[in-house]
Length: 407
Image (cartoon, rainbow, N blue to C red):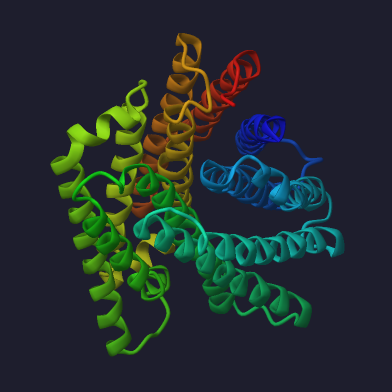
């Protein structure tokens, strides 16, 4: 059963390696030419595998590890069929989307991943009710499971539109952003919050503020979706609710920062093996993300931003790489799932450097797009950033294979 956890963790980082490799191919095709590759189909495989094979797989493993801490290692065996089935669906999408795009096989594997998420949510919810975790982390985990289920409505809406050939541009984009919102700001975010809060909420004085933070983010999650859809014609009362949701999330962010500053001396020993700087970077990315969401409440800015692909891509990478991926690497490292040594630190440093370069270039490209400027060699520069990312995660995989994973 410990062998299962070790293999699953190694697979998670190998899957991120594959995501980074496909990212290099996509960037190469933009900068040069690979006529035998369908860019759109490969992009679908890249994004689906990143969500299912990297983030969701690792979250499944880490959430099950939380149960194992309380119930024993037999929990890994109880969830093994779900984690392995999720991996099957992830690899199915990785190979089928580049070949056929949205076709019967790829849609079948995508549907399988959704059904697995339903079964996982039901089983994990039931186990949470008998788990000794604190109230804040349990609430966060339950919000994450609900958001994962809700996000599938966007996928089903897309499937219906494609099946009926009724692809209205606004509804298509609304469905895509619906799925992305409840994955990024729901399933990923609340699962991360549950993992983090589960390690610190037993410290004296932390339970109540952490519970309040979870509730504030949880209650605003649904209305915050419209931050991604302000380009749609919505009534003024709905717009007011969206603005209030954005302000409440900034308030919750302030509470997070205040709580961290107040209890930092108590928290530091829990994350004291060199991972603090990674948590700080992930936190910085989350702060930027939250402030950008507040800025998007200005309708003219929202319509402008969502009308330029480089800005959307930059924002999505900021969240998936800058916040989610850096946090997950920091968490697995801080909890000693990975053995701490200098080569691993260097490997993570290269990967993070690649993220920073990538985000900087995407920001420059986005600003240039707003002004209809052309940036010389920007595609080549983004290809180099993708290669740095790939090099970093390849080095991390080498370190993971050579080091022991804690039992």
